[in-house]
Length: 418
Image 1 (tube, rainbow, N blue to C red):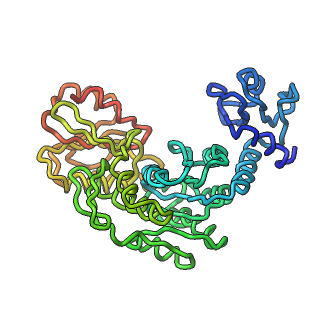
Image 2 (cartoon, rainbow, N blue to C red; image 1 turned 90 degrees about the vertical axis):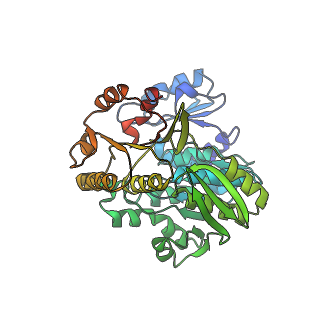
Image 3 (cartoon, helix red, strand yellow; image 1 turned 30 degrees about the vertical axis):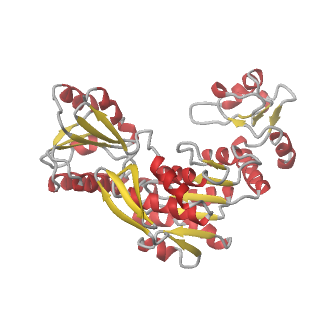
């Protein structure tokens, strides 16, 4: 079936699903495959649950007229998303970077939605499947699309950019993330800059942080829009305070590293003609969630939970920001950083060294990698070992930073810290 024909069927309802546990009425079910599952097997079930059509790529599962056989379900999903993107004819903002992508995306969406009908990536659905699903969630009512793009290898941002064809791009930063896949920080820079390459080749525009030398250098051939120069950093204890056109903004975001995320959202909001008062309101009312920079009060203790993800760059920024806070009794709990490849031992040791240098009362390190470091901090090889140890401790009047990679699941510590 030609993509144009498939698009006519999809555009009757603008619904796409890939999980039969979440099937919506009149949706298109794409039978994706993975290492441990085969969506083709659920094609009939999707129809029974209300899907209009199921898209499969194994002939034996085409058992009715409403099951459409294609060569490759994933490729057709991506092609349909790109066809839809072109049909919408709206501005798309493409967003990538080593740290802060999701927070920045949500801030941008909060600001732009004050004036425009927006559709943005849900959560962190930012890969070769998530980006097409984001595009296909947009309807003719969408006025601006905001697409987060993640990658852990070269050529991934190139692929995602070719699917969503952004008119505007923003790279949050270039940090030591996914070194195992990118190979080095130089690989990270090259991989993330694939967004710039697309923008250059298609005569599009980039928003840039003028204080980021790499952004400035890599975007030289582009039309660029630098951060609004009336945005100035004021303070953080623990929440970021800033000034915008002489108006003070009090946010619910912790860490000096979030200043650039906020500045990007303000700049993009101003470019798309959102009123100043609405920009300020959107920033002040934004509440972080999903274990990202959350501040949780537990009796006399203040917990900074940043356990959604971690890499050397974000870990260093979180520790330095926490160190600069005025709280007297500071405890740090760090979990392993993943996907660092050959650099893992060195990067974990550097973080352990930094913990020793900064002004913290107590530091707990947990995970196979941190356990191998040389440090004066308390080390635990397994999460359960740390968990049992902390059960015997009583925290009072403490500020506690909890940070680690997603797989460490350090948010579970909230159950034992009063």
